[in-house]
Length: 222
Length: 225
Image 1 (tube, rainbow over the protein chains, first blue to last red):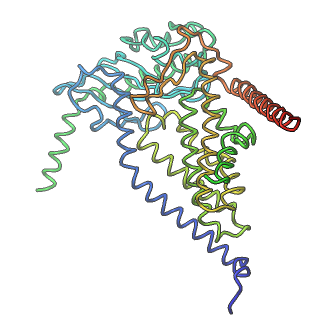
Image 2: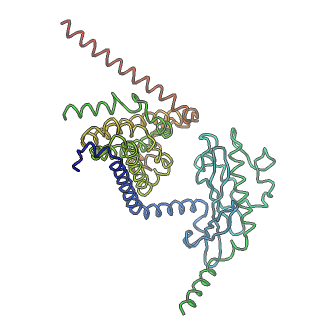
Image 3: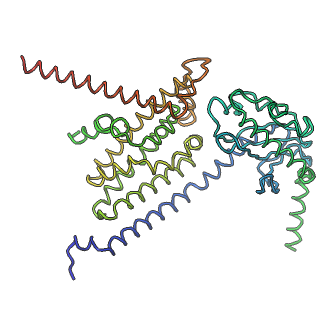
């Protein structure tokens, strides 16, 4: 019965227990790590969102917390889209949501801010994989191209002119990169169409929703 | 410091440098060496993983059998990388946004498994930990050199965005060496990494040769006199 040590180590059972033991230990460590960091990570993600919303929605337009109860609507890509609303009093003053388009190096994620009448307050690139020095002019730190859209809406120019000049539209492309601006314009056009389709829901004040919800709760309690 | 530790320092930083001599870990090297700051961040994250993996693997080396050693090493390294990834996401978030894509790739950094196999599984925990530190610093050195070269030639700056990683004091590190530089796209893209890496490897060989020639002539002089 007293198996010498080398033999024990060569048994399949020993090796199975070894692997199982290490896997269990790994799982425990990852669970502990996840618990320790998930609060901070959520906090950071909220800060990121707040920062990108601040870029496209001027602070004078709202006095609420933009991150509070976003409106969820079926978005252009078929996924649910969170719309962040800036209000002052009962009035919706600004809307912000994420749109995405296909660039040269992959997906381009944009955040766009609109006022209540669907005019663009600002558009910024959140993430992209475009060629440095060519397609990265969509970053506002590198060129003012993204600022051209401020104040425009679907109708100014008309929808068929929301294209680069090469495709018969109104906007300049960058030298050496047409695919990137094309993708960005398509995304913005999609965002504007989304506004047009959901105009009434987007403009109905969220405060009404709040009161109905709380009224329901009160009645539920009684 | 005993002889062994001197050996480890020399091996890690120069004689057996992961990049310059072993030519390992080239994937993360070329991917994140676009700027000196990114190189430094990736180097330090990899160093942390190498220290921890060297330490933990040497602790458990007594109970691991040769047949299952590789899966266990990979498991340990993967857990450590995931923990570093989560910690960076939580506490150095801005740097994580820059390096985020590459942190999980530290797992595939063959240099870490290589050190686990060739050093940590054969040595006590202190030398193993120290070896991880030195190999990691050697890797960091290569990343920062390559990153600085690509950043200067590619965009005319040095340590851009260092404040994102190291805090506001590092803003003084951020230099614009060539104002109004138009940028040199080839160097910014991965081919530029390959080209500069070639020059760095050649430079290292030249230095080694010069050192060898000098010690040789010193040896000759001492024998002739």
